[in-house]
Length: 69
Image (cartoon, rainbow, N blue to C red; front, top):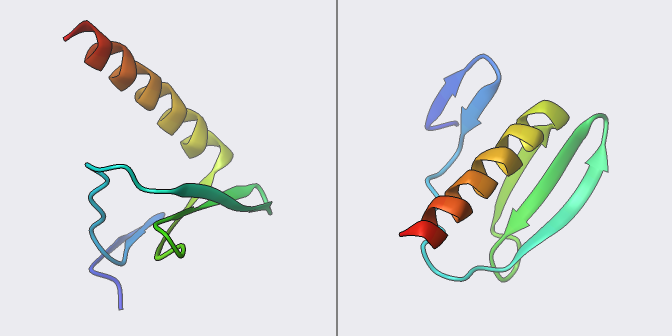
């Protein structure tokens, strides 16, 4: 059972990546990419191409702001 659900979003657990954690690309199929987080892929995130693009843009912005502070 999801902790939070609304159309297009299902949250199964809260994940805090404040420390270095391995991230791997698990698969790309059906217009979605699935990323695995943790030593044994304990956490999974699946995103559409549009959401993955938005994620990369926001991550790039966050890195720029971190470098400036």
